[in-house]
Length: 178
Image (cartoon, rainbow, N blue to C red; front, side, top):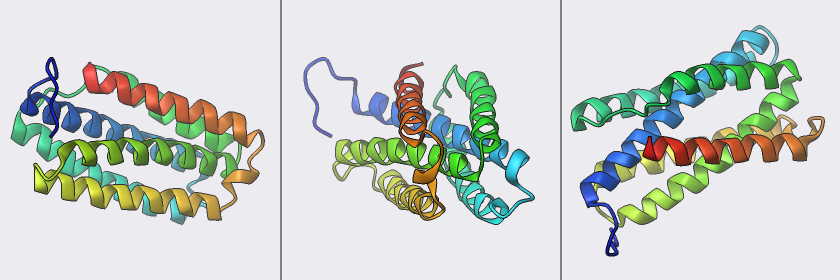
């Protein structure tokens, strides 16, 4: 990891990565739970369940990392519990394409986030880096699935995308620190 004067120690940087990734995967789990509550019995149900299972696996990995490394989870987890479900349910209530637009916006924020983490790790923490790389590929698969399902045809796609993408980036910034 490249380190400049005043940067946190490598251990603190890794702990922040584990904390924010745990929060993000928890939030993703809750988004899919909200979407499934609304759309789970419809045609989008199988796709949403498949993506939700992958997010649950990602979360299980970071649950173990939180415990094994003795990292404090984000203090904002109760907020992400409520807001994640609400975001999923609200976008699903707008229709399948809006739910998929939400997926595109979140997954593109996560892709950028995971890419920055992989660059920061620079060969250190190989097991963590391998997991992040694997999860990043699956997040991009979710994005592509959502695009194939018509995400860009959602009503007010640009506005919805920007709002959810910006909110995701804000949640990442806050969960890294708090």
